[in-house]
Amino acid sequence: MTFLNKYIDEVSESEEDKMAYATDASGVIGKVRRVICPKNLDEVRKAVIYAKRNKMDLVPRGAGTGLVGGAVPNDSIVLDVSRMNKILEIDKIGKIVTVEPGVVLDDLNSVLGELFFPIVPGSHRACTIGGMIATNAAGMMALKYGTTCDWIEELEVVDDTYRVKKIKEIKDFCGREGTTGIIVKAKLRVTIRPEKTSLNLFSFQSITPMLEMVNELKVRADVIAIEYLDKITSRISGLGEKFHLIVEYENDSGKINEEKEKEKVWKIREALSSQLISRKLEVAEDPWIPDEGLGQFLYWLAENKIPAFGHIGFGVIHPHFRRNDMNIEMMFNIVKKLNGKVSGEHGIGVVKRNFISDEEKVRFMRLKQIYDKENIFNRGKIYG
Amino acid sequence: MTKRIYLIGVRYMVDCSKCGLCRAVCPVYLAVLKESSSPRGKAIFKENGKLSDLFYMCTLCGMCKKNCPIEVDLEIRKQRTQLIEAGKETEANKAMIENIRKYGNPFGKIEKGKKLKTLFCC
Ligand SMILES: Cc1cc2nc3c(=O)[nH]c(=O)nc-3n(C[C@H](O)[C@H](O)[C@H](O)COP(=O)(O)OP(=O)(O)OC[C@H]3O[C@@H](n4cnc5c(N)ncnc54)[C@H](O)[C@@H]3O)c2cc1C
Image: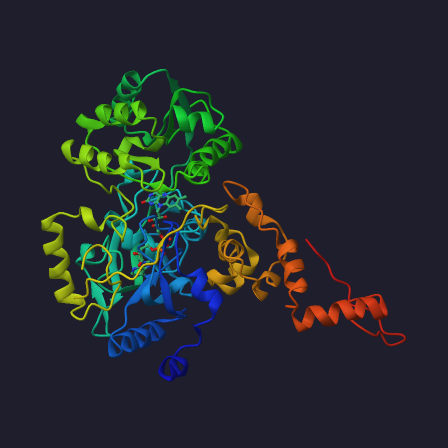
C-alpha cells in the first residue's frame, strides 16, 4: 500500500468506495479491493507497475454506464480515469481533437462549435471517451456515422510494459473493453455538425409496413437516425399502443423543427432503458440483426411480448428481459440462426462471455500475448 | 490465465436503475469526480442501508431527481435524520446545530459590531 500512497494522491479502501465501485449500469455486482483515481499519466503507470508486481487485476473504469459488467471488479483494483478529463487540443482546420480518456462526450461536443464527435450513445450525457473507445460504442446516429472505431486517428495506451505507446492498430484497443491496457490519450476525428436537424415521428399498426419504411429511409443521404419503439415501449412512453419510428434528418424535411419539441422526443427515447429497468426488466440486450432477418426477429419479440426498442436503422435492437428469463437463451439461438451477433454495441464484458466464437477466443489470446502477458488488465472480461 | 470469477452476483432493481446519467448534473460529483460522491453512489448506499457521512455531501439542489429518467428521489433529508438518530453526525453539523440553539445562527457567537457574511445564491 505504501508504494501506491507514495506516488498516487487518491487511493482508497473505504467501505463507501468499495460499495460504489462494485457495480455499473449492468446490474452485475463484484468485489473491490482498492480504488485508484489517477489524475495523470504518471499515476496510471504507477498503478500498472503496482498491479503487475503484485499480480493483481486492474479494472479500468470511465463513467460506469456500461451494460455488460465490463467495469465491474473481480476482487480487483478499480482505476477510475474520470479525473483525467482534459481536452488537450482542438485542431478545427484539420478536424482533429486530442483528449484524455475521462472526458465526457457531451462536454467535448459542447466546446466544438460547428464541429462534433458524431457517435452519440443514449448515455451521451455521462459516458467517457475512454469507455466509448473500449466498447466501440455506437448509438443513435450509427446509421450515418458508424461506430467509435471509425473516428479514431491514434491512441496512446499503457500496456503491461508500463510504457506509453502510440497505437495505430486501433482495433487492438478499440472494442477490447480494457483487456489489453489503459487508454490514456485519444486523437479523434470530428466532423461538421449538421446546421439544422428535424424529426418525424411515424406510427404503424404492424411491423411489415414499418420495416418497408425503414428500408426506404435508410438509403436517403439526409437521414441520420432511425429509432424504433415497439408497442409496449410506445405505450410506456405515452405514445399509444402502436409501433413507432423516430427519424432524424440533417435538414428541415421533418415536421418537428423546434428545439424544445425535438428535445422532448429524444428525452422519451433516452428514458426507455431506465423505464424498462424500473419495471424489473433489468436485462438490456443489444443483438445486431442483418436486414433479411429483422422482420422475423421483431415478430418473434412481439409474439412473446418482449419489450424492445433500438437503433433499427443500424440493425441493433434492445429487447429487455427479467433476470433468468428463459427467453434470453432462446433469443440468442434465434440471433445465431439469423446470422446476427449477440452484441451489436454494448460489448461482451462478463455478461456475454459464454457467447463468443472460437475465432474471437483466438484473437483475444493473441492480443493478450502482445499487450498483457500476465493478465493484469480486466481479468475475466470477454474471455480468459 | 486465471479462469476463476469472483463476481458476487447480480443486483435486483430496488429503485435506481444505476444508469449513471445523474453524474452529468450533480455539482458535488462534478467537483469530486468519484463514484461514491455521485447520486448513483448514494442510491447504492441507500439500498444497502449504509448510513454514510457522504449523505452530508449533497447540496439538496434536486438536479439528480430532475434529470433522472425515472425521477428517483434519494430522500437525503431522511438519510440525514437516520444518521443523527444513529448518533452519526459530523462535527460540523453538531457545531452548527449547537450554534443555532445557543445563538440563533449557525456561525456561533457574533462579536458586537461585526456583520455576518452575506451569502448569495443562484
Ligand atoms: C441509458 C444508457 C444508454 C446507452 N446507450 C448506448 C448506445 O446507444 N450505444 C452504445 O454503444 N452503448 C450504449 N450504452 C452503454 C454504455 O453507455 C457505453 O458502452 C459507453 O460507451 C460506456 O462508457 P463509460 O465511460 O460509461 O465506460 P465504463 O462503463 O466505465 O466502461 C466500459 C468498458 O470500457 C473499459 N474502459 C473504460 N475506460 C477505459 C480506459 N480509459 N482504458 C481502457 N478501458 C477502459 C472498462 O473496463 C469497461 O470494460 C448505454 C448505457 C446506458 C446506461
